[in-house]
Image 1 (cartoon, rainbow, N blue to C red):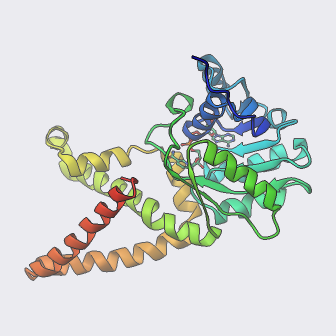
Image 2: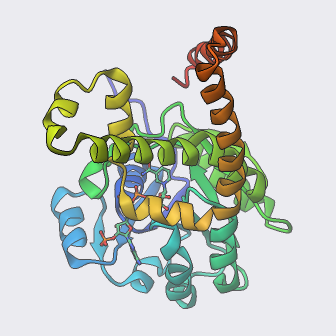
Image 3: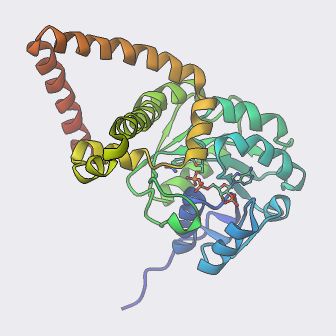
Length: 299
Ligand code: NAP
């Protein structure tokens, strides 16, 4: 039996700036399926670069960001959102004309605001956000199937070269993602509801339980059943990444939080006045949403 030949690489050299969960998962997938002839990375600390080299997620990982992007035809910035602008500024002078520069930030408007001014003439900037992740971080957390069956949202800006957008979309599809296109402001509002608010709630609930538990903390942990345990998993997400998400999606998150508080008061009132029908109506509606997610294989 012969192995099925791999399709021709989509890119010659892929450079990843930041090699944490997302960067290493992209690298592992690209190398597994031959999506680029060469996959390199650069990161801020020597320690992370050494780990990336030791476990072999990339052909080479260093700490010189500009060096890594030389001759790359696809560069993906995979740092926390707050560091994207500075990373772009550093790599800009070393970027090849005609190359694509993308990123994976969980927020789009702020990243576009911070990166776009530094993108050199002749380089195609196409922001993207893979909706896939875990609560783990660092190069050892990555795995090649992270993006399988998950959405990747591209937010191309006006006037961008369409063939660059098509090539990046093809790359994400080859990573296993389903690709969708959105405007950056709409992306931030949608993700504010489906991702940022749930994380904020998880951080709050776990913090509140911890404050209340005091000396009886071990009992809270011992009896943590499904609901609370699920929140603790989300609340274990990377503090740097999530600090940056909230600071950089401030307007959308504050708007959604306002609505959320109104809805919470509605439930609080229904509980106080024994209005079981209101609770039942909402819980039935939300159960349907879960079922729809299962049908769409996104559960
Ligand atoms: P991570 O595992 O914490 O890795 C972050 C990487 O960025 C590390 O290599 C880190 O380097 C590097 N870095 C941090 N600050 C830097 C700076 N100032 N200059 C250069 N490199 C820097 O993070 P991640 O989970 O992969 O997240 C990366 C991006 O993906 C974030 O923008 C996040 O919003 C987005 N995202 C995350 C998820 C998720 O679930 N985790 C999902 C979708 C999108 P050192 O270790 O060397 O300091």
